[in-house]
Length: 113
Image (cartoon, rainbow, N blue to C red; front, top):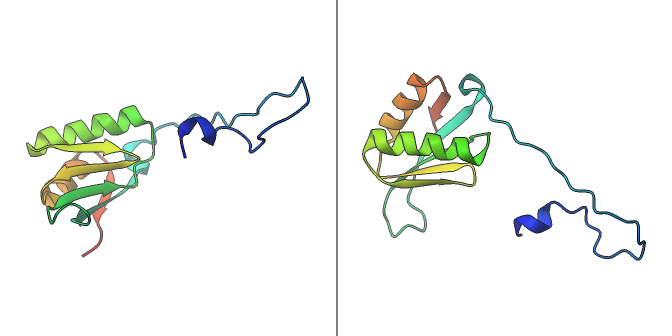
C-alpha cells in the first residue's frame, strides 16, 4: 500500500460537500538509545546465498535510522542500507555491530541461530 493511502480513514467517496478526510498524523519520535530494543541476526534469504547482518526493532524517524545505519556501515567498512525500520549490513558483522550498538548505549542482543 502506498503512503498516500495509509493516512486516509477508509472513506472512499462522500457526497457531503463539507466532508474532509481525517488523517492520522502520528508524528514518530525516536526513542532514546537506552529504550531501544534492537535485535541483530544473520540473514541470507532471497539474497543469492550472500550473508547480511540485519538489525531490527528500531523505533524512530527515518532520518535517525539512516544516521545509525551510516554510522554502522562506516565503522564496519562495508555497504548496506537502512529502510523500513531495518538496517542491513553486507557480510557477517554480528559481533562488531553488537559491540558498536552497546557502546552507543543501545540495548541490543543477537537473535536467531
